[in-house]
Image: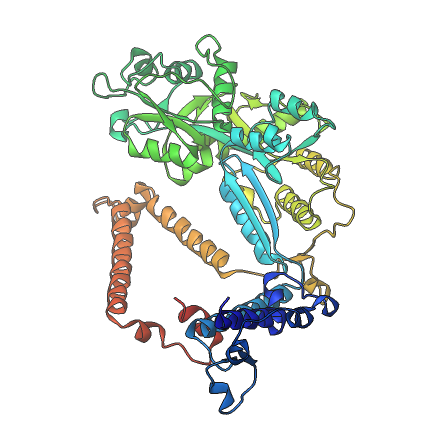
Length: 583
């Protein structure tokens, strides 16, 4: 080998086994022990080519005037932009690591606590607000989520499958129907059995809504359809609004000939579907042959339309004239949808809104409690429990119970998540913030709530779990504890939404002022005026002005240079250097 190549080879080995040993830690290697580093002795035994001495290279790690500039010198004083840049990146990475460690310390070492659930769409708004309140009131960082996917999917994810070894995909489930017998048996057939509890939270009505134009009702205030006629419509036997059976029950109905009934039904599993089908199956089994279940094999007729979730049902009915469908009554009332009046066990025909105002949902719950409809043991099979067509003058015939599904054995759950689960269960069962009523649900009776609290007390939590406590009135010192959920903590967005809701309620009340009161206020000779268009026009004007201001501001901002809009990054601002300069 040529002398100059041998010189480079020696310099490389000198580097690797010399100062290069300090680089090994960057690549997860360890240094060669000093006793094993025999390079100097080995090199002494190597036969060098002629002229090697003159070609030998020198490694320098410190400044050496004149000598350091020699042709045969490899010096650490020479650098490249690439190596400098890599060094800068390492410095930035070290700084970022330090900031992340500081953030972890800022979280008091507690860490972010996740809690996840899924199930019925009916409780989604209630749970969303409850979770937001709980996150706001906790000192530790909670991360609570709920997927509104329907009771059927919720039960599937609660039970699990072969891929999960029949372990739940999340921490709790929710549904407006009890766990089906097949799902319950699947849980119980595991070894050991996956025992669960039902915890009733609230009662709610399922209403049947339509979009027949009001002027077609011929002066009637609502559309009336009995259970057998509904069964025929939802099974495809009656397909037009001018069918003689429809006109017999609604003699003033005046629709164009052969106007098709656009039937909307839920896809996948839905507690709303379970409620409607259970009611029709109980009231008119001769006309309803599709069974009682959260999942129905619907007719494939052209007038049948698949929708996903309660929002999909509401959107379809409101977006298509002459449609009919079913959903949580509170959801329909919020959007002021037109409703079908149903006949209850006592022969009284009303809408769900009228029945709820008379306490009809609560009465159905009371009738069920007095009839021992609910099992005393919350861990048994509840699949036969239903509140369809209960006795009572004011009862609503399709009442669902909203349940939490929770596995009894939580001993292997992360202790912090288990504590969050325990706190959430207690929050929604006790409902001290009255959220159930806010979202159109009826609170359970004292005996039913007691049953739920009793079921909650049977859940086995990790031995190391530290439960959350609740501060409802000021507790000096103790209220600042790590595991305290304090009602004294607030968030502006919850406050702001409550203020907006109150304003909306007042606006609705003004829009619904009876015309008779308007006439009396204006005098008998004054023409009757409807203030709804005026209010709507005012709202539209306000929205228009706000939109114009936002658009004008956005235009001004878009025309300014970036630094003028956001400010030039400060050279002393580490955050600006880290994120702004790398953008």
